[in-house]
Image (cartoon, rainbow, N blue to C red; front, side):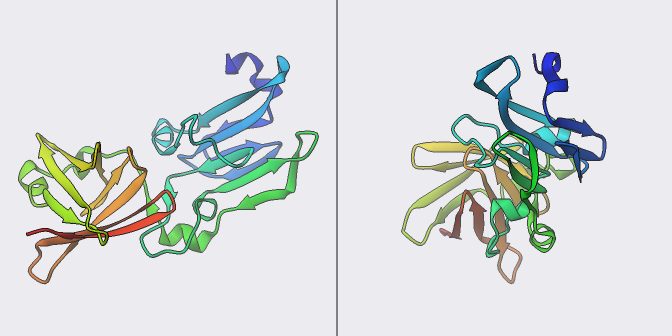
Length: 217
């Protein structure tokens, strides 16, 4: 259906840019979410999700319970790292609102912070080379204690890692070495090692929260 009125939306996507209202934001492997009046029904809105690479859709956090606070947001998978004082707006390519007539307005657009993006984590769909062998995954499995005393369990099932926190659980997707992304919670987990190279704990960041956990022996 989007294609049927796509020409009436102020959005174009090319291989190396996302174009909003005629303004191009250079970005490859990026996804854009946009809320805009429905061209077929002025009493309704459309929520458009598009990308210039299929891989980019992996980084788009698309959920009716998590609508972007902007009229449009362009993302390429960057997210704040643990200890980094940065917001999702700073690690996005750009975020913006349209004016009262739903036209592009440069003064209502906030570009991402290049320095914050460079320091942040880069989320991506796991590649075969990123997936550790089962015996390596076993090194991460165990119980970890948060500062408040809660215990988080990480276990291996086949060639995958899963985390259980209370009644919630989710799969941990491998990123770079010792780094995983947990889609169910929207957090990035970075394991830490002691002087002998043994996993000693982890840090996590996502959803505006940060946690540190120590391995329970």
